[in-house]
Length: 198
Image (tube, rainbow, N blue to C red):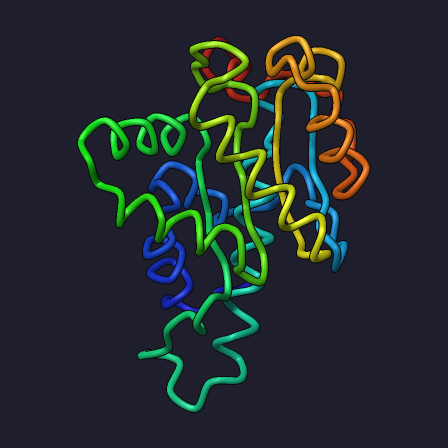
């Protein structure tokens, strides 16, 4: 797929890291499920799940540009999408609480709760202080709202559902995640590792 140059800018605005932007180059190894209600990809680390999800978001950005009268200056529509690399975002949420940045925290929760589509990358790789971890509590709140209002979530995870329950100590949360936004199971070689040792 040929992307308009503005797509990279739109993804950067949503905090997609530069390394994952490489997903826009070359042929995809995996295709993220195109489910209007949202979906996930779970399984092998380094198989290309995050790249696949970036391309899914890029296709959404390209569709906006295709309809825009001036694509070189197009912006995301209000409340369109939120992207969160969950390793980084979970730590950032905790820092906001610790440093009293309550407005930033509330703004993010509001955006993640109400946007048209929420993208969560690398669930289960975050550092947890325990089952009452603050970031995990926010994730529960956001996913509970989105489930109740039938709002899409796209997500990736290296863990199986059983492993995610062991990590989060919350069978209900994991059950809701995989039921509402069912994951495609990925079983593949670690492409990241293979490229370095091959």
